[in-house]
Each structure stands twice: as structure tokens, then as C-alpha cells.
Amino acid sequence: MSNKKSQKKPEPQAVSAQFSQQVIDQRLTPNPLSQISMDKDTLRLALVTAQYALRATRQKSPPTTNQPTGLLVLVNGMEQAGKGTAVKQLRQWVDPRLLKVEATIGHRPLTYQPIWQAHTKVLPRHGDVKVYFGNWYADLLYNVMRMATSEHEKDGKQSKDKQLPIAKWQAYLQQQLVNLKQFEQDLVANQTKLLKCWFHVDVDTLQERLEDETVDPQFLYQIDWNDKKTIETFNEVATALLRQQDDWLVIDGDDKSKAANHFCHEVLNAMQYSLASSKKEASETANDQPEKLAVFEPVKIPKQLKDIDDSDIDKSDYQEALAEKQARLAELLRARKGRHIVFAFEGMDAAGKGGAIKRLVAPLDPREYQIYNIGAPMLYELEHPYLWRFWTQLPDEKTDRISRIAIFDRTWYGRVLVERVEGFAADIEWQRAYDEINRFEADLAAAGTLVIKYWLVIDKKEQLKRFEDRQETPHKRFKLTDDDWRNRDKWSDYVQAAADMLARTDTKDAPWCVIATNEKRQARLDVLDHAIEQLTSVVDS
Image 1 (cartoon, one colour):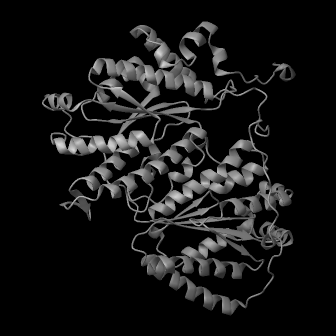
Image 2 (tube, rainbow, N blue to C red):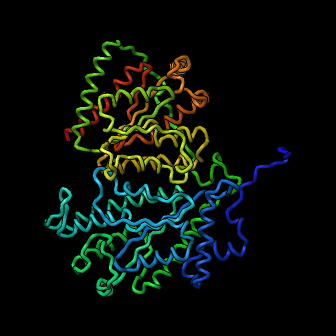
Image 3 (tube, helix red, strand yellow):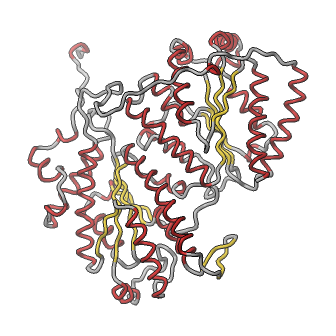
């Protein structure tokens, strides 16, 4: 019989502790590329070692002090510049089971969604390395090239139009690059590191290789690489991109073998830096505050979160108003011409989110919308950036679903609410999340998605009444959990977290609508009134 008292939980250790100091020095320590030029066998060994060390950052047993970290390698550039040769060599030199490769060619950005959204499902999980040909930059370059040349798309069909003035496509490119830079910075902050490789060859070399029998029948940006004027325009666009984003690594593809070797060295270097960035001190916990973190200033709790309306509404008047508003809402939703809608419902436990959502969708066909009930993240969701599980549930033109309405019962705001209060997120994580969320919602709004956010408020006495009602009603008991009672003990902490959230994320792109009433019926009508108001402005615009 084992002695349970003598069994100790293993102490977390750094991933590097699994290797000898010599291995760390030779294969895991980041080095500037100019100082390393490994022979083939040494490089292959270093690549595989770094692969397994990166995978170990996500292991649960034995635990490590490293943060789970992944690497995304973006591959773009000129056609016939050695991209395929380089990735093929990398795949031969590493453990192919731990290297994922995805490839897309450029397409027009999808309607009503940010240019990055269609690509979020293929982001690597923490611990993995993924090489992604094309990616969101292929879509961007495809679109810019159509703007900058005489070929444009109208209603999905190619047409010959007068090319747009240079200032117009440059302005579009510049703004998209700003948005993508911010999106990528949020990836990096959430432990998905990036290596961006741009392969380049001169025009003469390109023309020679286009005559090869092995030419790729589907080119990355769907442009005519035999047309010198098109190539000049592409190089002009590429120059603007590389000047604005200084984190691209340019690889000379004149010699494909040398380019592949260069690429493999850079991937190794990126894995080494990813491992270095994943290190944290063993004493660091979710509640420890790093020295570099600025002092967080809670806001004063606004009156609307403290003074709750107790008005009453007659049941027959409510039913009549409800039917009228539901009919109007359904009419507006069907007149919005396919525009994507995201409803986000947050609020205190038992504040009426579920009831409001039920009345919101009552007049709709179930195929017209999707409801996402958000709880604690699953393990595979924790192995991606925090917002990933929401990015992948957004209305998406690329899917087969006819619905373009997403309704979230609990949302991405959990990071600054329950994760903050319960200590599930480190201080630096939830304090950083306000800006991450604002950028996320701003990207949706800029693409044409309408984001409608509700915070439902009741007072503590009304919450207790609703909890007791749930406990006494058989078909409602499932709604009440031990977590609900525990959260109630931290009422003041949640109110403060809500006040800070509203103050920092009530933006022009995605303003909050606060519904503060203890009357369920009134809250439902108020939600419908606000949704009607928002959709009326969309339909009339």
C-alpha cells in the first residue's frame, strides 16, 4: 500500500531543465543569425530539439514554469522565389508530426468581416509550429493588386475598369497594415509568436523560372507574373508593405538552396526566441504583479450600477408591447442586406440575460442565428490566444451557415470580470485585455459588423430572490450552481470590475447599453428597444 502522505506534487520546472547545459547553449539559446551558420546535421538536430522543447511548454505533467507558447511562420513574397523549396526542406529536417503546414491563395476579403477573421481557425495551438503560406497577406495583396491595376471585381465577377488613383489603394493598404499589425501584436502578447518571411527574386530570374516545367498552376496572388507592368506594380505594393511593417525577414530566392538554408536558420532562431520568451520565474503566479505593470486605477462606481429601477409593468401591456417590438425587430433584421450582427450579453448572475435572448430570437427562424453560451474554456481553447474561441465563432461568409447573426450569452469580457475577480488571469493579462478587446471590436465595426453590447443590472436583494426561485422550481434548478452562490459573496468585487469594464470599453465602435432594472419584463422590452434603434440606423443608412 502506498503512503499518500509521502507523495508530493512535483515542483514546476523550466523546460530547459530537461536538457543539459551544453544542449541549452548549442541548441536552445537564441543567437543572432549573423553569428551562426550551422552545418546540415547540427542545424537539423537543433531544429528538432527546439521543436520538442516548444511542445513541452504545454505539458501538464510534470508541470513547467514556461508559459505555453506556439510559433506561426507566415510565408509570402514573389512567385518562384523558393518558398515551396524552403518549407519542403524544413519539413524534411524536423519531426513532421510537430510541424503543421497550411496554404491559401489570395481571395477578395469577405464581406462584413476583418481580413484576418477567415484565417483564425488555422492558428497554431500553443506548443506547435505552423507554417502558413498565403495567409491574410495573400488576401490583402490580392485586393490591393485589383485596386492598383485595371482588373477589379464587381459582384464576384472580374471586370476591366480604370485603375484606382495610387493614393486610394495606398490609403487602403496603409490602414489594413495598421490593423494587421495590431492583430499580430495581440497574438504575440498571448503567446503565439510570429516569424514573417518575404521571399524575393529579381524579374529576370522570375521570368526564367516561369518557363520551368514545374511551375505552380495556381499562383499565390492570382496575378499575371508574365506581365512586366503587373510585376512593377506588385513590387511597388510590396515595397510599401515592407516599409510600413519592419518585422518582415526578406529572403533572397536567387539560389533556392541557400534560401532554404537561410529559412531553416531563421525558423530555428524564432523557436529559440519563443522558448526564451516563455520562461517565467517559478514564484510567479496569477496574482503576482510584475514590476513593469502600471498601477491600475479603479473607477468610481457609477450611479446606474447602484440605483436600480423597481418599476412594475402590467402583464397584458407587456405582452402587447413585446409582440409589437419583436415583429419590428424581425423586420429590421431581415432588411439589413446580410450585414453581420453580433449581440453580446453580460450582467450579474440571474440578471435576465437568457430571458432577454429568448425574446430577442422568438420571431426568427432558428437558421437565422447562432447562440453561444460561454462557460469556462476547454483545454484546446486554452491552447490558443485568449480571444481565439470567440474569433472562430463570429459570423463568417466562408461557412455554409446561412445565419449571419451571432448571440453570445457571456462573452470575451469574462477576462476582465470573472477571470479578474477569481484570479484565473494574471494582472498583466486582464489589464491588457481592455485594449485587446477594443481593437477586436473596432476591427469588426470597421469591416461593417454591427456589435451590440448589453450589461444587465439587478440589485443584490433581487438576485437572492431569483436564486431562491430557481432553487424551488424544478425546471429552473439547472440554472443555479455552486459558483453562483460563491460569486454572490464577491458582489462588490464584481460591481467594481463591471464599472472598470464599462469605463474602459464603452467605445464609439461598440458602445454599451446598460439595462438597470429589477423588473424582468421591462428589461426585455428595453433590450428590444435598443436593438431596434441600432438596426434602424443600419437599415436607413
